[in-house]
Length: 603
Image (cartoon, rainbow, N blue to C red):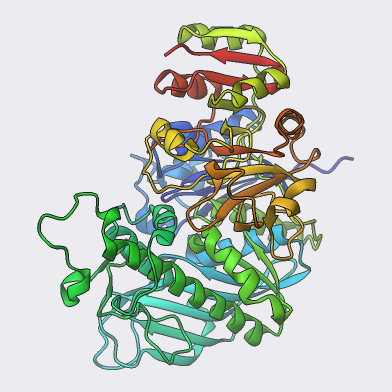
């Protein structure tokens, strides 16, 4: 008799909310709520949970990921009293409807207390390593309510900032080190042999650091706010940093002579759990003068502060990686948490650690959306005791599958008064060669924040005015860099991957080879780097063939690639989202390679 299928869905509840659905341990789909709700950083994955019904009408487990438990943060359903997520799953019929099981439900597994562990689980299971040590660098993970030792320490709340885990199959994650931040001053901030029961583990934790200072990501958030952005928009600070320079006038962001990443509280003031701020009034150089440009990104102190933040935080993470190797005795290192998306830092590690024998894997879905998949995979391993080591994950096309009929395509086009025509790759190459932005829409959407050729805007990388033109069309800031997608077989002639064979998930901002910058100025940043994606025929056949056709016409084996969205919007998810975005922009062309179809929106 055939063994019944095991269906596990996991939800990430906070910002970057979303759902991951597993069938017998395989990802059926994974999606962020914002892609469906069309609201950036949307929380509460209700639309994503409803999406589960397209694949199964019953779940064995619903696993919950966040930073606080369901009891602490979720609202309640009237009368029944179950939390809103259990209630929605019950109302959809995904879990048992028996009211005697409420409000606690055996099918609902709340792993919110293990936020950093879920980051570690995803990166470890995706890495291809048989065993590894995980370095998690995050803003504010799980909240811990604690009564600390010492008569002068009142009850307080602590937040995870950095954690090191020893990882082993099938589901063994042992805390070796944890930095916890708090709002108020502490008496006796460092404890050795900390009780592991505090983190749900047996035994003791070798090293726990408690401090009222900001962690690495909170430091980055403070500088991001100082540069005029929302604290969650750290990618903009990463784009601004090469416009700055190293200078003695900017104060040091971290204290010296330390074994843990403790920020300088005279400069960076944390406001746990959300954000932090730069103490600009403490230092003359950080203050603004009257009459200065309203665009603060053009001010010298902002640019130099962004430079200091990028260079100093990446050094702190490199030191944490070394610490992890020393504590664990393992050379396989996986990196996750919000800082894992810092592609400048990721490239820096390749140079900084190259002579230390470290094998590095950086998780492409390092943001909180990845905790949904981490929770689902962890629950699957816990139930099945499966020890299988899968090859390193190279593609992120995990979104729902869409199969549009020709009638549906025409219907969506007519809704926006667009034209539909049949085209070939050569026709699209001609459009690109004539300096047209062409959107590409195909297959399953990409998991995580990177556009990898299924939901992308494409352009000519040789256009000297390309950056300014596309930034204007996308309504982005002038300093924001762009990415490129290159045929895997050609990458080493154009870019220095520092020993990597490829870069399929666009996680590194790499140097271009000598003499290359002037050939593809539209995708080279001011520091001579490009956030590059390599592609081969197995990973994305349609995209590969299009770029190969572009190379045959132009001699350039790559295209300009940026996310298919306008400033402030999530990436498009559906065909309607795609055509609607064109109707609101100056982009006219949408290519559907699976259907050899071009939708043209006359603006």
